[in-house]
Image 1 (cartoon, one colour):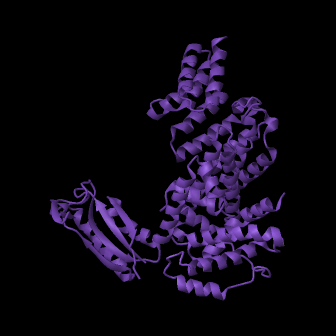
Image 2 (cartoon, each protein chain N blue to C red):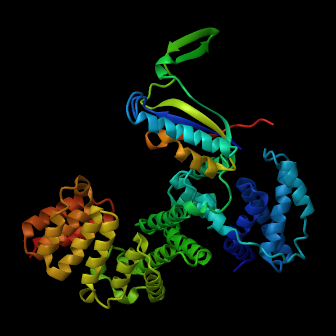
Image 3 (cartoon, rainbow over the protein chains, first blue to last red):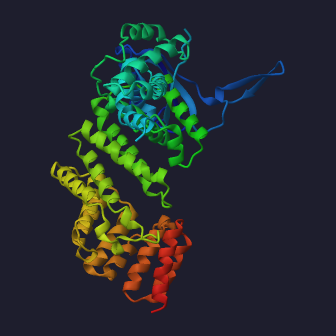
Amino acid sequence: MQFILLIYNAENNGPQPGTEEFGPYMQGYVDFTEEVKAAGKMLAGDALQSVTTATTVAVREGQVQMMDGPFAETKEQLGGFYILDCEDLDEALAYAAKIPDAALGRIEVRPIMMFD
Amino acid sequence: MDMNSLTIRLIREDWGRILSSLVARIGDYALAEDSLQDAVVSALEVWPAKGVPRSPDAWLLTVAHRKALDRIRRGATIESKADELALWLTQHHDDPEDTELVIPDHRLELMYTCCHPALEEKSRVALTLRALGGLTTEEIARAFLDKPTAMAARLTRAKKKMSAAKIAFKLPEPEDIQLRTDGILRVIYVIFSEGCHASNGEMSRENLVNEAIRLARILCGLLPDHHEAKGLLALMLLSDSRRRARRGADGKFVPLEFQNRETWDHARIQEGVALTKAALQAGATGQYAIEAAISAVHAQASEFALTDWAQIVALYDLLYRQNPNPVLRLNQAVALSYVRGPEAGLALLSTIDGESKLQSYQPYHACRADLLARLGQREEAAEAYRRAIAISDAPEMADFLEQRLNAIETI
């Protein structure tokens, strides 16, 4: 069963590039990614660029509307994700708790809809 | 007892065990529950005519299997493993009349599943009452003063999440066991508290107390070495032993001090005290076991004045160290006032009177009023009683406080 682990955090919350803490923080992600790969759970996973680069698109009455910025203006933004192949929700939740940003922001765990 | 109520009672006793066994076999909780419900409908039709089968639980399980197969064939479920499941069910097609299969007990897995932290707390409570208590959706709705449609929607949502998000029907991993078991205890305690707060004597709500005790008994049977579970069961039995005494002949609230101790339920006290001892001797140090110990001290005092207050003060210290909650200090202040006098009680109260939440907490003002009255400070006491009365949400409590206020004003 596939789960997506959505990583939410405020962009200025946590170690910033150029600080001493940034290295160990990023190493946390390298280690986590290694762990899920080695366990054969990793299907995909990436970090996203800052929300200042986001564009939101909608089509209304045939017209494409574009808006600078993310879909929702909230403090905590989607910053990255993993898609993991897990036995059940407990396993997905256990992995979610190991993502470095779980200690800073929040991880939303959602099962992926399967059409078969 | 007529046939129908006999059938319903039989089914309710066995519901959790049969359901858990069914979920273990077919994997899908919602399908299992619907199928067992179908089997119950059949039982209510067949048993009155043909008599109750030799082993009613095996009959229900077998018929529920068959109903599950029907449901899959009708496409009532969109489970992708439906074909596989249908095949399995066809191969395990027993005759309900001559079967004597042993039903494996999977109620523990069912408890962990229903109390899964990925579900909302109120849904955990409702699911547990439905799945293990065998209560109907209507009964659960009535107990929580909800509309049946709202409760049904809540249960449907929870069951959908169980299946779609794959909340597995299994025992938790060893590293999670403690937290997850605490979660079950909490759900049982929430059910109990809901029942206790049924102040106007609504039967459907008071039944929640019995349900909580029943669930705790089941859990203690399934986890015989879990001492906090024993502590919880003990706490509920001891607290419930005073249920009748809390209400006077006129239906009014009677506090511990003025209760007729003859009317306490001594069977519950005996069982509760024995369980408390067993839990504490086995090393239980959790909230429920210590609260049970406090309740046991009260239960063993033949009159209010003979209560071992010093021990209660010490037990509240233990509780406060685990959870520095001002309400615990408040209760401790009452106990302390009987050991070292009302001044000592007031002094302890003054250490928490900066807590803003306490200002809107009725027992805080009632307790201060009582301590002040015992010191002879009538005006301050009357003022504290008035504040307590103003924020009482239970009318019978307000009546009781009103009486106390009148008593000091007419001296």
